[in-house]
Length: 262
Image (tube, rainbow, N blue to C red; front, side, top):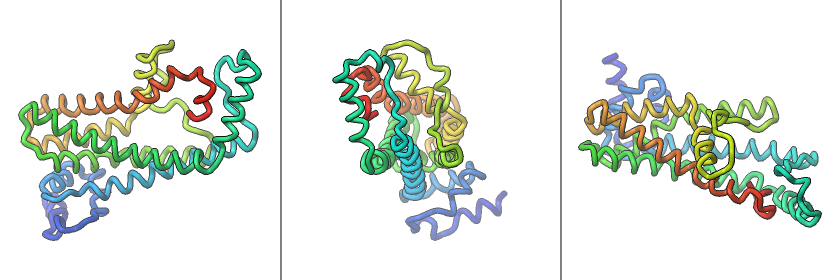
């Protein structure tokens, strides 16, 4: 084990821009590799973020391909109670659905949204984790928190790859992601928010949480209880912020103008 750790700590590591060699090491030997990453005085978040953005955009493109094929076959997902719409509302919905069946809405906007989402979530996790651990007496730097937030997201790359493979082999969208099946039924923004949060909870998120905790303990020297509190508070807040836009849009789901867009 000592020899493996020495291989990670090469003198030129801190001067490199890209660290693709650390990707499998983080997944296979997380403690030793994250200790090396947190000891690096330079930002090392570019490598995992680039990989995550690429697979997130690829996931969005594959999903867009399935949506475009379904639309071309005349398969339109109608909202609940569509049969009770007036003829004008039904025509408006179908016209909007046809108008959004193009390259921009099927591929470009979803891919850009996925890339933007990766950047925002990474920054939120790093910033919140640094803020909370500082309030609890941690001594980690903001740069270390951002590095840890980026490298701990590697399990999400595995999640995206699995989803891409499933969609390509089944020609169907991913339904019931995470623990969304346990979401409470009924209307209201609270139920929609909880359902959105549960859709992100799976084994890959648990894997990410474990990596966040290991990196935080190494960089901040917080005790175990405060370390877990910091990580769990960070994750819960970020999950709520991620689910909030969809929960708000769900409250306007009855508007025929916006339904085809979401």
